[in-house]
Every structure is written in structure tokens, then in C-alpha cells.
Amino acid sequence: MDEMEKKIILKRNPVGIAGGAILIISAFLAWIEIPILGGGNLMDITRLITGLSEFGGAEGTLYSLVFIAILVLVLGGGIVALFKHEVGGGMAILGLIIFTIIALLLQSELNKSLGYLFSVNIFSLIGIGYYIAWVGAIVSIFSKTIEKKLIG
Image (cartoon, rainbow, N blue to C red; front, side, top):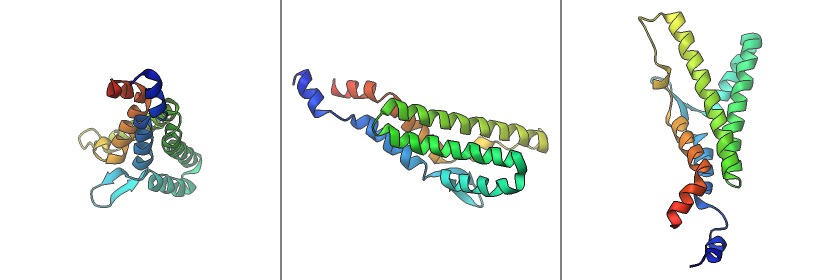
């Protein structure tokens, strides 16, 4: 099979499409796992933060906007990754980095308020959707490299 036939057969990059699909699915999986209450997906978390922002003043509104941005970046990144793999993966990684920074800030606030003797590790509450989103974003970004290695 020569180069022209390979290009015709693989007009769409199946690895990039899989990465985009993984990103879309990850938004509907649990991003936060609270042992007694269960898990909440990215849309549930955004709805909760948006609802609570009414009582939080300007800071609550800021958190609401940040979580809406995270949702748009991850879910939108998954949709974009179906067509433009690197761009969609980059959007999703930006959303994931923002989510990670928010989690680290929350960890710092919890340590300050609870004291360092009683510490809660916020990353023990992170659900599978967060990690699956990282996989989807990385697969999307490196889809051309992965595809070349699969084809030979």
C-alpha cells in the first residue's frame, strides 16, 4: 500500500476521533466522589456552583463563571477534537488545568481552616471523569503520532 492509498483510507484520524469521544464522555462521568453522597459529573458540579453563587456574592459569581468555563472547555474541546484533534485536546487540557488549580486552592483553604492536624486530601475526592478527561485530551493531542505508529 503506497502513501496515497493510506491517505485515502485514513482521511479521518480514528485515534483523534476516539480522543474527542473520550472527552465528551468524561464530562458525564463523576468528577467529584463524596463517599456518603455519591458522585457528581461536570455538569452537576457547574449547576451546584452556579446555584450556590447566588449566596456567595462576587466570589461566588466568579467561581460560577470559572466552572462554566471549565465545562465549556472540556465538553467543547471534546467536540472540537472530533474534527481538529490538537485544538480540541488543547482546549480540554486548559479546562483540566483550571480545574486542578481550583482543587489546589480548595485544598489550601481546607488546610488553613481545619488546621494541619486534621487534613483532607481533596484529590481523594476526585472522580474517574477527571482522569478520563486527561486521557482523552492527551490522546487527542498526540493522535497524529499515535496513528503513525499504528500504521507503521
